[in-house]
Image 1 (cartoon, one colour):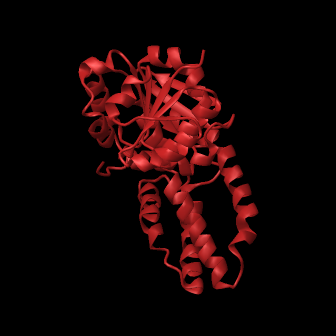
Image 2 (cartoon, rainbow, N blue to C red; image 1 turned 135 degrees about the vertical axis):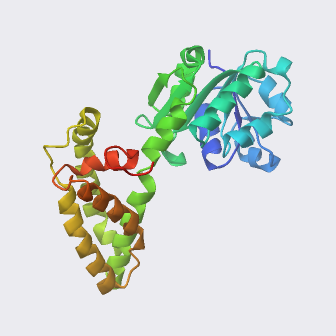
Length: 295
């Protein structure tokens, strides 16, 4: 039998989650503070709850997709402890590990079984076989509803019972996003300075990202073992490249000031005698280890 599920929060991602449950045949209740956002889903077969209390009462599995854990607690505040009655609460929102631990304590105080999660893709990818979602917290929730949650993405992972693990991995993995995008945007501005179409470099950028991806297991092993002595690329090599970046910025008349803190990491590693080590030794700079740097 298909598990009834309630989705709270109907932004772009929340709407995509609700649609995935509807398509998979799960009786789906939806609620949003702005009630009109539920209308398109109701037209597709969802039950639009009038109140948050009704939304929680409708299903044994409550999936929230609000901006932060604080927003989630605020939205759920009217629901009494008795109304939770050991229902499963799965949060799919942003937040740091401390926020996740606070949310877990809140859920425990309110009689809810708690599982924190993260969707590692865009709304359009929800429901696809290779879309990654990971969860942490009450394993009984994951065990009971794994089949239902897999509707949201075929690559569904349970990280462990610590309720903050999903938030920890979310931030650890997400740290690559903005620097990568800014690097792409710098390339875009550079091409446009020559009157070239940004679309002309997309294939090459994707190939470059594939190459970087292939190096991650090597870098991870170096960091896990603390052995940076067999470099594929050294700190000194990156320092030499910094001069080219400065020249390019001047020629293309683009702002490359965002490189400054990155170049500072390189200099700190070199000054500590690690110029010939693998570039992954920058992990130690970030940790403040061996380099006498303030954490």
